[in-house]
View: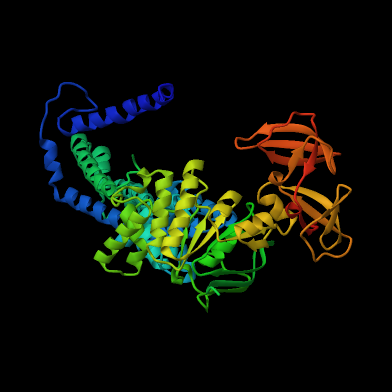
Length: 271
Length: 346
């Protein structure tokens, strides 16, 4: 173990310089009047907290929570059966289907978002087939976008757990009198929870913090918390306010994280 | 006559193009300890899985308690299995593992508690209810797996090489306990193993299998003393297998010497395999009917294993009386120790 420490060093330095220090800086920004573009004397102020009570911010936080929770649930409902099916396949077909499943992740995410956007406009290539979706600005557009972006991240962790599961456990369950459904509910599902937890985290986190996706697919109508933070930093240059909102978002995510891990009694996924 | 619990007739099973079971005919009586014995890949586990319902036969019939059960899924059969690697549910504690089957039957809670307690007592793990499966040793997991199966009071318990992962000492202990358990419960056991000693120690009936075919069915004593063919003779204990000619009933010739024997029913002058067990041969210093030279001697604990060369044929002899390498010896045996069997291709 001791020898391995040196191998981990670059990453630890990376973490320190590019994750921990910036996080501390954000924290400092959020509770002071430090001007990042004109470093100098600063004093601690509580102005940032006011930002959190602004209706726009509260609304965006609610939107983010609602839409990311919904997207995660949809991903779970679609992803679990898919993972179950993939895990039950014979090797040859399995490899091909999983490759097909991962393939979209290899293409640029922004590109895929824009692709959805063009489909959702009233005038799109779908008009050729007599269809006009006109979804831009609706929650549905954002949900479809999020689901398509993050579905692989839900499916793959569940798949990898199911794939490793000892099939004799299912046989044992049936041998002891359980029907297919009972075997699934009493054995397969509880044993795959660790995969579900990973999947939920890997879907929930990016959809909570998404900003490009809602920006393109909502046509500016639905603001998510990611958009608000972007505006604070990039448009209004209220860096201290943006930092405060970031910190608040981080806290919300940590709370969600702890809640989810709490259900993962085994703790195998994360710890 | 004892009542037949399971009857298997003309059972055939292939995986892809590989025929793993060829025309299997077998019956299992109530309260009988049957062992399926054979080398790995002989089809014994497949046969067990067919009885359990995890696989379906291509052809043939299995009846259980007078009822054809082929179409029944495993959860509808009054049969329970102890799996090779135990297959205990890792997310449940000992109590919930054992109670699993009873809960499926929607049994009363307090009744379940009683039954689980009894089952734990049977496998000598009282007070283990709350233990986590992962903290148990291999031997303890083995016992829990047995308890989880027998608590359902099946008429037939299937055991798939359950002792394979245990060390020698524990294995011998479990052999004895399993036999006791089978007697106490009064149910039939079908036990799959590749270990001939295990089979001989525990069974009422041994079914020797090779290559998807049943080679011999019989009591351990029959199987050992009267192996029907070369394969059984070789697989059950060590054997000297010699080419011989059966001149007529009770007269066989091998190594150029005619011996009277107890076997009959062969064609006149039929070429046969003659089997003599290593412990049935006695070595004497003086010249006799079959003479040879001691080639090697190994101490085996209870006995010495002595290799004697007769011409260019090797004989294995087990004896408590050591010899020197190079000793001139003669081989002696009783006429009932000569086992004559139909010549096989192997």
